[in-house]
Length: 360
Image 1 (spheres, one colour):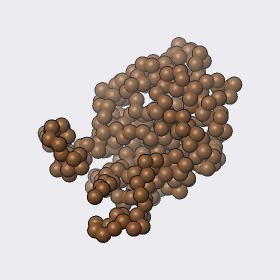
Image 2: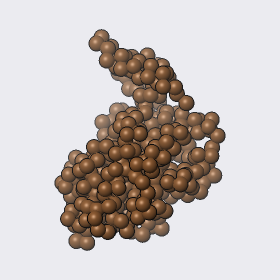
Image 3: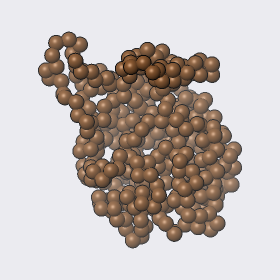
Image 4: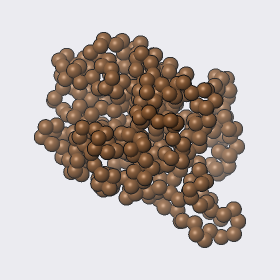
């Protein structure tokens, strides 16, 4: 664990190096940082687009960074008020050294590890969970077990459908308390509502539009798994059953466009509705990107959706770059001689973290 003193010292080092007034190239400034300072800098919330894979299957081991190629967030399910279960419990029970080793590998590949809270197992509002106490307990788990943040997968349908706006009030208080414990820019905080909860004039407390109005600035991104199975329904014109809940309609109602992550099941058995083939989803994402959206894509769940799945989804919009930190699946530029056989720079590609391009 990093001590407070050493962490602050590293942060001050970052600020002094990046804030230097000398005309020094950024790459030279970054190369002067200590390994600890680089780790502190990497803790910042990743920018969009986000490519998120959830996992709630009982697997013998956690995937390597190479196996997650194309994703930049891996979500463990689930953390409950009573404690961790399933994959989150498996993470909790790993020896500290093994957790550190996995995190180091993920950090080097630009992959954030988060934990998903609640799911369909718990009904926090209906069950009268204290939102402040629950947030404190869950934030403590995040810090103790070294993950990069938490995803709020609130599925208390009874409360959300009920009168009085109790669900929205609970979520707002819970989110504020999480942020008090998990400062923005240091920890990831996301929400995973179903898209119909963004429907205006439908919910007693205003639905997720009300949540967004009160605490949207505290949330890094929201993903909406939905019933929509065509590009028009997904992007611009939702069904009459849930009006104004397509991607651009939600944005038009006040949610930041690039905080909206499209969520889909990997296979038909992974959800009751909403399945799209990865090639169809890729086409929809490409259309949305051309209209200014850059939020990213989430899938339930790994390993039903592997690196091949996300590569297909990203191909038309955010193609995977040739360069890779992993060093075992793509060529790198030679240290001397010419660059024959090395792919040229593409401004439409998403390059892995820490890839450095120099021109001579």
